[in-house]
Image (cartoon, rainbow, N blue to C red; front, side, top):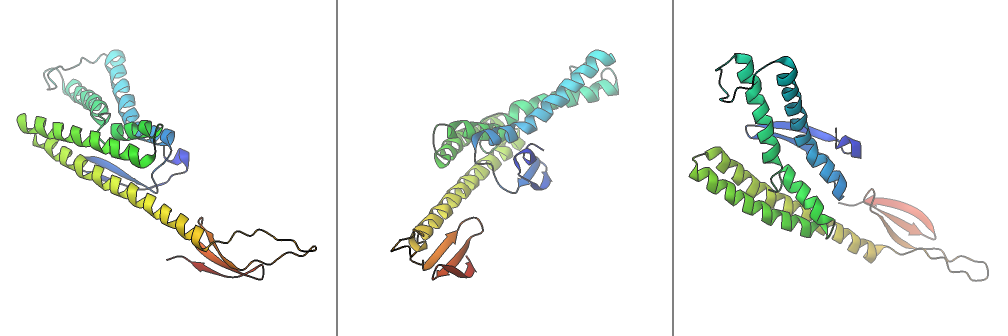
Length: 223
């Protein structure tokens, strides 16, 4: 819903043992949309935690500190869900790119530099966080944390490569446009306009238009 507010549709949502991953049609490249979309997930966890806390206060349930059915089954269940959502909020806001906190960190850095540099900085910080998570996981024998660290490490590098590739593609498009596009600047000779010949690049739909004697004669789609 947060992405749709910026005109970005969600292709699908895949559930993995480590959590769900939403595939968006494109990644927001401006800082504030990325911050809003990244914080939408933790905001849901906050809403659930607040609702459960209200249930404890208004509903008269007692919080089960042992997270087991020492009191009642309902108290143990809702206590576990409350704690789980609080843990998810804290964990997802760790600046380990490309987790939610890492994306927020990348977006903040991009306010002061270009997107590739911001992604590189976020990836380095994310790598440090992944190493720390792996160290804690091995030390505490929490091997799921080691697996999460490995996923964060690999996905961070994958997204950095994707951002670099997109920037390189755009650079190539600009070079081709400068190479083949002839700017139509009319030259007047005694009230006569010199017709324009050549190719014009349209980056919106990635097509070349051939002009002859000032008129478009054909359009070719780029490969």
